[in-house]
Each structure stands twice: as C-alpha cells, then as structure tokens.
Image (cartoon, rainbow, N blue to C red; front, side):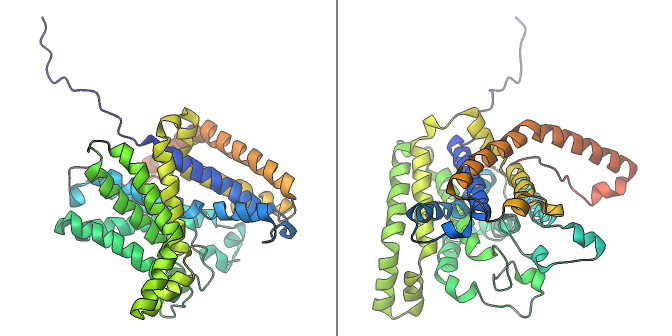
Length: 386
C-alpha cells in the first residue's frame, strides 16, 4: 500500500453565517432608508404620521448596527490568528482595508466640477466609509499599542472608549476645532457639516470589537449558543429601557452633570440596546438564515454601497435618481420604488461584481507592467471583498 504523508484535514469553515445575515439585513435597511429619505416628499415626513415615525425609528438602527458589526468582524478575524503584533497578517490587511474605504469615500464624492476647477466644501465632508475606514485603522493602532500588555487591558480600553464616547457626546459632537484644517476636523466634529464623525461612532466599533474578544473567549463553552441570545437580549433591554433612568439617578445621586445630560438625551446607549436585541434575534434564528443569496449579500456590502451611491445620488455626474425624483414621491411610490431599488442594486452587484473585478485587475496589471514603480506606491483598488 502506498504511504501517504502530510494528509491534512479539510479546513473547517469558521465563518459566522448569522453575522453575514445581519450585515445583509443592515445593508438592505440602508438601501431602502436612503431611497425613501431622499425621494419621499417632505409633506409625508411629519411626526404626526405614525407610519413614518415607525419607519424613521427602525432606519435609525442601521448605522449603529453597521459600525458594531464592523468592529466585531474585524476583531474576530484579528484575534483568531495565533500571531501577535505586526506578525498578525490581519493587521496589515486591516490597515489596507481602512485606507481603501477612506479613498472610496472621497471617490464617491467626486464631482466633474473638480476637473474644471470648481470645488464644493461638501466634497471634504466625512461620510460612513471615511469613518468606518478610520475606525478600522484606529482599532489596529489600539491593538498594536495595548494588546501586548494583556487581553484585559485591551478589552477594558475598548469598553471604556464606548462608555466615554457616549457619555461625553454632547460636549464634543458639535464643537468646532479651529486649530485643525477643516478637512481633518470633519473626522472629529460635525460642526462644519460632516455627515459622520469618528466619535461617537467609533464607540459602536469598539463595543463590537469588545464583543468579538469575549466571543472568542467563551465560544467553546457548553451551551454557549443557548446562553448567547438570552444574554444579548437582556443587555439590550437594559440599555433600551433602563439606561436613561440609571444615568439620571447617577446624576442626581453624585451631582455629576455629565450623567444627567447624557440621561436626558440618551440616544446612543438606547441605539446600542437596539443593536444587542437585533444581534440576539439573528443569533437565535441562525439556522434559518442560511439562504445563499441572502448570505452573499452580506459578503459584498462595500460593492452594494458603491453601486447604490452611484444609482441614487449620481456620484461624479449627479445624474442619479435624486436629480429627477428628489422629495417628490408619495408613500406608495416610495415603498414600491425602494423594493425595486433594492432588487436592482443587489442584482447588479451579485451578477457583475466578479466580472468588474476581473477586468479591473487586468487593467491594473497592464498598468503595473508598463509602470512597475506604481506597484510599490498603490495597492489594489477594486471591489475585492465586502
């Protein structure tokens, strides 16, 4: 009998399907949210309209969910590696990923006017891609700086960042930073028009990273998946219904103003409660969320974001749907339009993404062959993953 050496067992797929499912849900919520927000007529956007109020509330869950999942997925992949520090291959990938997201953020805000000398201040506003990219880079820096001192210090730092960024949000979010160039100040404050700023949103990323660390620590315990959804739901309900009373009580008892201010305007902790509840639902229903198309949507969220931005807002040429239908649809038209919009965008990405990648890689390789020095300056810039 022939001797066979070095037989290795097939690699076990450790991908968390319910995370992909949750990402799919979040990106679909974003698609319909942006479509309805941009095209629904203003006369329907009134607080007396119960339907609109419900829609607006659930739309508000999308961004916190995305940022939390970003932190969870990145830290899960980073800490799953045995190597530490710069030897961890996920660290360099994370930095590259962060830079790509920031670049995409600016590319999508480009306008044809920039090429003829016309600039608009909104080009420099930071949006979700800028902040997610910066958050991933910041997680990498925290990991490099603190993880060598022990997991507890690293984990408690992540948790502390979330708590502090949420508590002090009223003090810094609208404050101007005159000593910084406006382009950089957008990353730290919304005072100059930024759509998203690093804080408080990095607080959701850091709590996601904290959860990933705990997940890796306890995932092999008996009955882990029986306890996890209950634990997440309990914490979520506490944050949703009790965080405000607790903060107000702390403010009254200690006389520390920040607790009272945060308790009076407590949208960050309550939104985190929504995220925990949503997370618990998807963990509990994980066995039913394995449809291949639905899961694949969760793997290509960046591509979907890019395509939706071009179709809806027009990007460079401003020829998107908002040019013709901005704030003009009634409720029925907006709902039906949002469904069609979601289907078309997902179809385009799932059908043509790989072809676009292949063609882009060929063009890139031809350029690098003719100009080899560029290969040392630029990294790949395609729809490669998520």
